[in-house]
Image (cartoon, rainbow, N blue to C red; front, side, top):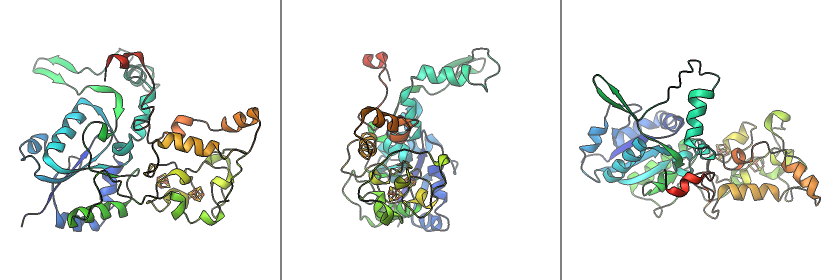
Amino acid sequence: MSKPKVAFYWCASCGGCEEAVVDLAEDILKVVGAVDIVFWPVALDFKREDVEAMADNSLAVAFINGAIRSSEQHEMVELLRRKAGLVVAFGSCAHLGGIPGLANTFRRADLIDEAYHKSLSVTDGNGTEPLEKTEVPEGTLTLPKLWDTVKTLDQVIKVDYYLPGCPPPVNLINGAIGSILKNELPPPGSVLAPDMALCEECERRATKPDKMAQREFLRPHQIKADPEKCLLAQGLLCLGPVTRKGCGAACVKGNMPCTGCMGPTSHVVDFGTKALTAMASLVDSNDDREIAAILDQIADPVGTFYRYSLPASLLHRSYQPEHAKGEK
Ligand code: SF4
Ligand code: SF4
């Protein structure tokens, strides 16, 4: 009997999700024994034409990581959607937009200006910018169109399941592959991780006070955190109370606060808003000026509360007049 065919694809992300697959270590041999990996550009020399030649629905599952922000990524995920019975949004960027999604606080023109003209590492100063078409004697060279707005995978194609995390924890990847192979999947649209807050699995939860009274929000470099006590109780902005569990509280184990990469539980509509209001509600003051001073200690509110989820949020991106005209 032929083995189920599986594809992996990488859109706008750092590559950490591809590393997470390699982090399966010897378990990857079990995966390779159970499935045929027929497309994985980062590791195997298959081409787009190979996918185009496959029959529709001939892939059992396509694991797609990364946000969508270019015409090429859009074409590739539409192609994989046609070829795959199941599509899994793999990692924070495909799930919620991830770190690349913070580009939605800028316009494409501003990003190109910064990268090709203003950045201190740009030295030639001849005004070169990437062009979608360039004529050379041999013909026309093309580059994908960079979108103005970064999107989550499910804002572009239908997604069947979500594997959260930056990157997804190995135990969840193993669990998801096992569930797919045994056909023991939860209802479509599910996030393949426990639907409870991270504090539930944090070894420091016994030291988390029932009622917090936050007088300050500190950044990790500002204190030497006690490795036994709840980080939030020590003034560090730990998003464990609003983040989905499943990673084993990996960052807290390293004495760093949770930044929310697993995203929200199913009860939350907008992770950033939930995180912001949860932290604001802990502030211990009734004085407007004092409250403002405490909240001002949060250096980068968008980068703190929407670090992984701006494209998936109700805000989606900063408003620009050209978007009203329908420009991507
Ligand atoms: S707030 Fe952070 S450190 Fe405290 S119990 Fe929750 S996850 Fe652990
Ligand atoms: S502790 Fe938070 S930021 Fe770290 S891996 Fe877990 S969910 Fe992600």
